[in-house]
View 1 (cartoon, rainbow, N blue to C red):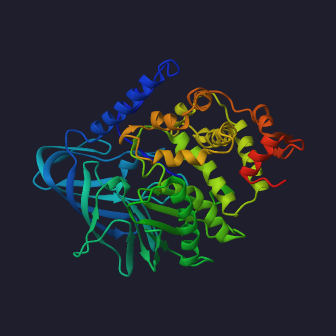
View 2 (cartoon, rainbow, N blue to C red):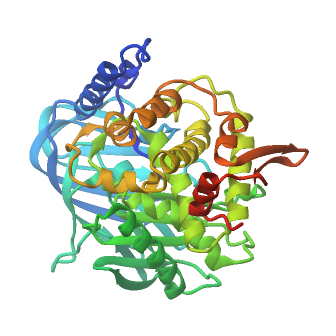
Length: 494
């Protein structure tokens, strides 16, 4: 799952428009402006700083941070919310500045009458929970994951980092290390560092794209097994997008550091792809029957985030696409790789349809994306995936098999989208390239139209059978030639 930070600013609320339906383009432009404004407000009056940072693990639940800024400033701000997790800045303690008296203006906000270029503080880390373990820095026993977005003030963007670790601990990251042993970080909020004892690494290249696999803990598979699975998925997405990742990718696999009982199979693993790093935390007791296949299924979703949205320079809340459409594309990729068959493809969509119908659908997908962390956010995934499925069917039928949803990804990376463009406007322009597809996107993305598969699927030779065990998508027995051709393109074998 990809997540992006919620900045510490009331400007986020200003992005809501009372009448989005009648002024979509105008409100989307306002959203982009509000996003830029929020970042500026979050950083206060200080400009982005270059810095030298030392991060020390002093105790099992405490991190000491020392920073030397390139230019003295008098205000420092820490992020207080990320991916629905609140109160992050409350972990900051003992904040001090050299040659300046600092006062705490609010949670995560520190001010001084005099400027200072050297600060220090500690970060107290509570035990990780299922709600935050994939999103925030954590330490547990002999391993941990450091995410600079919640460890450093927002004023610090570019930095060189030195780490002081416990004895026999090592560190792995996608950030380059110079001859002095310092890690060079261009964007602090995207930087992730895996630390711990006995880290095992396998390095390879996937059609010229560097990839490191880092394992922590004991697993029934080796680094090479995970690397082979990731390689196959990355090759698929390179072909899908036509875009070669510029930075080294790192996939970290570690035990889920949760002591509380985990009984729900949905929490067998947690993951986040930030920048060029994928952190996958798996419950060692998950009991997966086929571990290598399970890794492939997870990679089909999470690895695509290295491209979408992480390699797209778009702004705004278009989670419906980079989560919902990614779920469907991952399902298609699993089918193409032979990890699942066509029967499971339809069965998965049926299960998603049941989950979707169990939640109210009163907002457009754009509105759901904006409120993703203020509510359950499930429709971003569920409805987004179903809309992607229907869009794929529509495009295949409209083009007589010449185009699919997959072609839209190559369009996204064709270079025609302007950097920092509004994500919703950009994605909609690509998906809605014809009159029919534009009408579809307006109906299911911009408006709050309910997805009714039973009404839509018959045109494509399918239907929904409602049973006591849930919805089952099935292929009809009497298909015309066009329907047969479309279903075969999806993987159906009659």
